[in-house]
Amino acid sequence: MYEGPVQDLIDELGRLPGVGPKSAQRIAFHLLAAEPADISRLQEVLQKVKEGVVFCQVCGNVSEEQTCRICRDARRDPTVVCVVEEPKDVVAVEKTREFKGRYHVLGGALDPLSGIGPDQLRIRELLGRIGSDDIKEIILATDPNTEGEATATYLVRMLRDFPGLTVTRLASGLPMGGDLEFADELTLGRALSGRRTV
Amino acid sequence: MYVRHLQVVDFRSWEHADLSFDPGVSVFVGRNGQGKTNLVEAIGYVATLGSHRVATDAPLVRMGCARSVVRTAVVNAGRELLVELEITPGKANRARVNRGPVPRSRDVLGILRTVLFAPEDLALVRGDPGERRRFLDDLLVARAPRYAGVRSDYERVLRQRGALLKTAGSARRAGGSGDIRTLEVWDGHLAAHGAQLLAGRLDLVADLGPLVSAAYAGVAPESRPAEIRYRCSLGESLPEGYGVPGGPRADIASLEAALLTELARVRPQEIERGVSLVGPHRDDLELVLGAAPAKGYASHGESWSFALALRLGAYELLRDDGAEPVLVLDDVFAELDRRRRQQLAKVAAAAEQVLVTAAVAEDVPEELAGARYEVHEGEVNRVG
Image 1 (tube, helix red, strand yellow):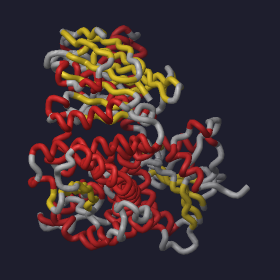
Image 2: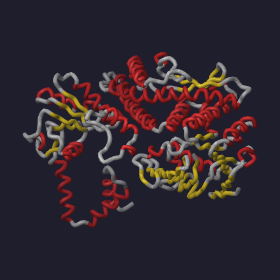
Image 3: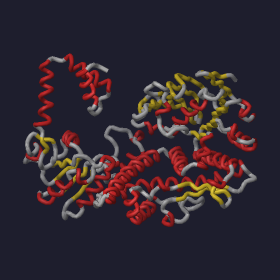
Image 4: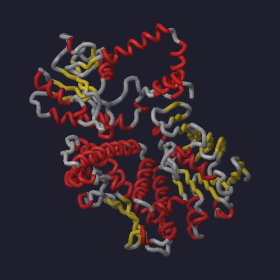
């Protein structure tokens, strides 16, 4: 245990995801030795991230203004919407540069153990968008785990009553650059059942 | 297959141990509390990623240490694989095969297969259904490692669905409506994963049944005939002949449909009680002696014979599948009478590798004379 503020800082840092007690201690002493200017810059961005960042009113992504950069961009295809769990998933899909449509961020996945049901996710907003905007395709890009799959199944049920709407799910299968022999059976099984004609 | 080499670091009572084995019989002798069982437990852990004595990993790590390491070299049909496991309680274990890391520790399942007999096996006959489900599922994973994934997916869905039912149930009791809009989604996933697990277990029981009956007749020829039956929460809805030797193989699609129908039927009770009432987690393996269930009716000796027959059946089954499992006999001879000892020794003497622990050397039948290791105060030495 360190005295007063140093231990407080270590405790606070230790509450961050992915930071254990050892790392928290290292970061704390790094900050202690840092230039005052560096510290005030860090203070400023921390302050800004809480005050200056809002969530896009349309898609729910993090944004500086009321609507985010992607939703404002007229060149993006408004008829295709990719539904993801978190803002970081938007960044992941954006990095592919393959997707020219828009997004909808749910803010999580169905997770009864943590008390997350449909009302805690931005599902009502999604249904509202489909009702009013000219959306032709919804791509379900939730994580391929238990909670993400359940969320996708739930959305399929909610979306099947919209006439003319196509609902698709991201393919799951083999990673690029991988070897067939090293794929686990579940992944390979899915890749096999999701095969396509070439 | 056989274990050629075992090294443990900070595992249970062992700060460090390094042992080489030959195929055939190896006997560990030492007074109680010297750590004989800990050594074979480590080998069992590599095979099943679980201990036969405790449900969590924390007791496996030596007091005051953060993690323990188990390294084994396994020889299967002349080919040697090095499996290393780092056990850190509360975190995901790390695994390496031939010094290369594997993405998930469960990828090492299937490299080493063991069948372990221990005094705890009596719980298979006398304990709760959960003991017998674990026996079936462990054997299922040993036969086809894919089931490790099926099992953990099913358990995850079950916990999520349970949480949903619980909150809905208590909301209703408090006068609210209880949000069950997503229940059908979880029903679907429960049925999909549950049907796979159920089909695996039913086929396993069909294959295992005759082997267990035969093993029991060998161990206790004067007793009534023994039989195993799968008791399914689907009850009457379970298609005829599933899980019965010589019957049809279980069809996953029809089991999934049956589970969905049954889930719809019991839904009001499930919400009321806040628990999932249908699925493989409610099933049991019935052990029958003559006309009566073994649990509650079998004598102490008969219970032991039945537990032994289940393990022997599992051993025969894995051997029929191909790679011969390593047989581990942990402190069992002291518990058995002369006939059962001889019967077990007969099977063990023919196995590719047998690891035996005993407090006194006289307990081990003569058929199992082999390499001998003395375990004493944190040291283990080969003496013969």
